[in-house]
Length: 284
Image (tube, rainbow, N blue to C red; front, side, top):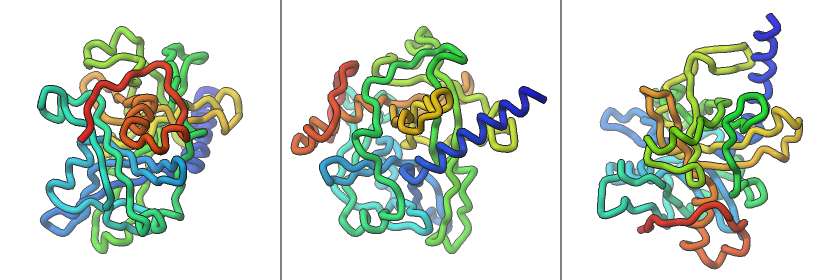
């Protein structure tokens, strides 16, 4: 019973943090050939030097090649338009070869106004030098926020979708596992995802299939230990899920910031300077 009560307390902490930060993570949709809504990914809202950005995974942004994409506010959807930049796979390879997998969209003024009921993160709410420590109890605690496709009601009228974000508390894995996924700890975070141990306010429940979480946010969940919400900072953008080993991958926010400094030098001074990462991918 004590363990069950502890799990519920953890679930309550996760939900509290999710409610505080979840409006900074927005779902991205596309209408399919049956005129039904299809969730294709998630995104994170960020403002720097009064410039607004929608950040997502490049493979999510690739869906625009099949038709318009729509971003969800609190109560409805609007077509996602604006200038964009995204990572180019190395050596003219396929998207699956892109280990950074990032896209930046500068939404139009009308879209920014439409999203005013959501939350745009600021540079002081991100941590560009996070270090993943895989030690249960005293190590790194993380929270994933995104929109699994199994949690979204796609029935018409789809202009009034009320999305249901997913909050998942997890831990990083040992650094020795990174190599098999072609990544490094200073550029990515490799996380456990055990669907059978999802902590909620109702205790342990089976979690959803996380497809659709790509482009969502990864937060360092320090407040679970410190009881200090200000310590919870964005540390990554979710890009992959591997079902067999039950692993999720996030690109570190340090790489995101390095890319933004390179692509948008006029806002570089408004962004923190990462010390642990070097950007190697090209953007187009």
